[in-house]
Length: 152
Image 1 (cartoon, one colour):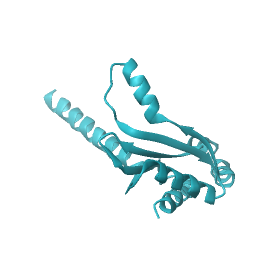
Image 2 (cartoon, helix red, strand yellow; image 1 turned 45 degrees about the vertical axis):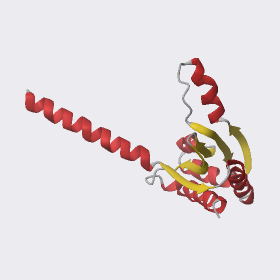
Image 3 (cartoon, rainbow, N blue to C red; image 1 turned 90 degrees about the horizontal axis):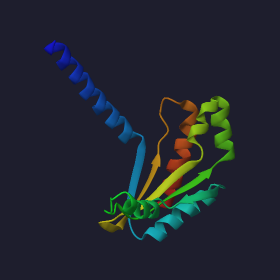
Image 4 (cartoon, helix red, strand yellow; image 1 turned 180 degrees about the vertical axis):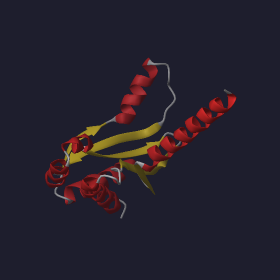
C-alpha cells in the first residue's frame, strides 16, 4: 500500500513538473529598457508594417487594478499592462484550412507590460503555438518577427 502511494506521489510530482515546464515553454518573453509608450508604439508599428490591423487593446493592468480591490487583493502586479490583439487573413486562413480547431489561436496577441516594481524595463510576451502543430508554425514566425522588429 505504501509503495503504491509513493509511486502515485512520484507520478503526480513528475506530472506537475512537466506541466510547469510546458506552461513556461508556451510563452515567449523579451524585455528592453525604455518607456512603456515607446515600446508599445514600436509593437503597433511592427504589426502595421506586416500589413495587419490592430483589432483590440485589452487594458489588463487597469482591469487587475480595478478588480483587485473588489476581491481584497490590492497589491500591484504591473505598472502598466496591455494586450494588443490582431489577425492575419492569409496566415489564419492557412492554419484553419489545415485544421479548423486552430481557430482557438486567433486572434493573435502580444502583451506589453512593465512590472510594478520596475517601470524602466518593458516586457513583450506572446503565446508560442505548439511545435507539434505544423500549420501553426507560420503564426509563431509572424509573432516572432513582429517582436524582433519592435525590439530593434
